Image 1 (cartoon, one colour):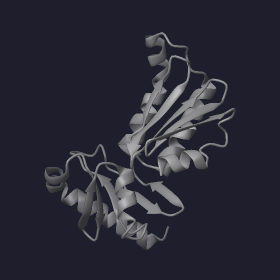
Image 2 (cartoon, helix red, strand yellow):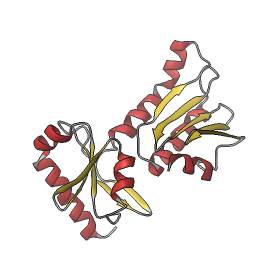
Image 3 (cartoon, one colour):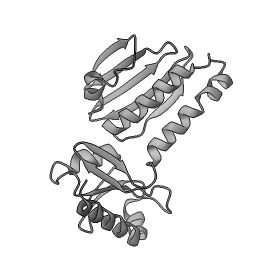
Image 4 (cartoon, helix red, strand yellow):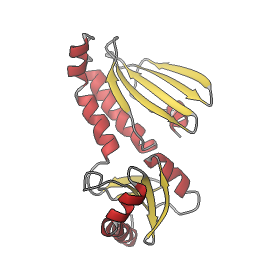
Length: 202
């Protein structure tokens, strides 16, 4: 990433910080795209903000920022076709999902479910991060009654995906694409996410 691009996005982030009170008053809870000191649009998710803004502005030329009070959602997000870099904190959506994953053993114990294996937890963490890179959004992560870890990607563009990581290292993916339900089972999750999952998240 060119230093000039990084510096430009840092300036956009500074613009956000300088005008945060006004942004919160107008866009609290939304995700805004900022370029040239102007809010280009406000969206319900990081993925929607990125997908919509890149239709009219070059990747790497705009900042995506969740609007909220304080600094809990501060992040400088630099976008390019081949790279996603977090210069500050990991965005709160991913951090929350990772925290839910790390608490899933305790949750399973409380619910009386089989405890997910370390293999399932490791695969779920790797896949969660990979899926977030494909489509930054809110992911729900929780244990299942069968000892799996579920990664639930709620809908967007009439699409949703549910990935179940089992304790043997396999996975089951269930997707809804415009009302059409599809599923794929994998004996190993090492090569995931594949085209099937990427298409469901796009």
